[in-house]
Amino acid sequence: MSMSRKGNCWDNACAESFFAQYKKEWMSNLGEISRQQMTTQSRLYIVNYYNSVRKHGTLDGVSPNAFELIN
Image 1 (cartoon, rainbow, N blue to C red):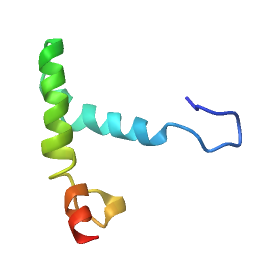
Image 2 (cartoon, rainbow, N blue to C red; image 1 turned 90 degrees about the horizontal axis):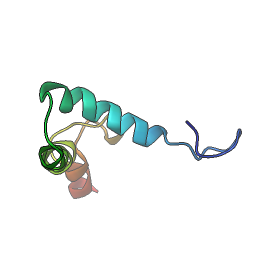
Image 3 (cartoon, helix red, strand yellow; image 1 turned 45 degrees about the horizontal axis):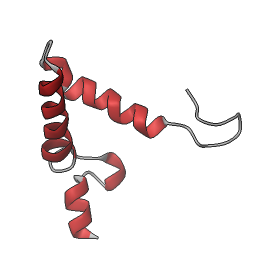
Image 4 (cartoon, helix red, strand yellow; image 1 turned 60 degrees about the horizontal axis):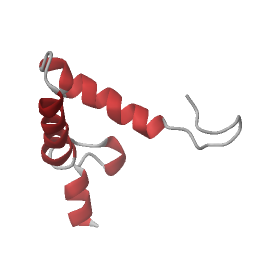
């Protein structure tokens, strides 16, 4: 779903990509969990995995934290 009219590039492709990866890489193995556990798992994914470990193709194959240290 786009956040703007046709021809404008204000869409949510980045958010859609993030949540697709989040569900595929992290949440698919957890099964049914409580809201509190979901909050905890979301923080773990973002802080400990997505920013620190996961290699990003747009960052020349390094994590966001490593990219920040390099640049």
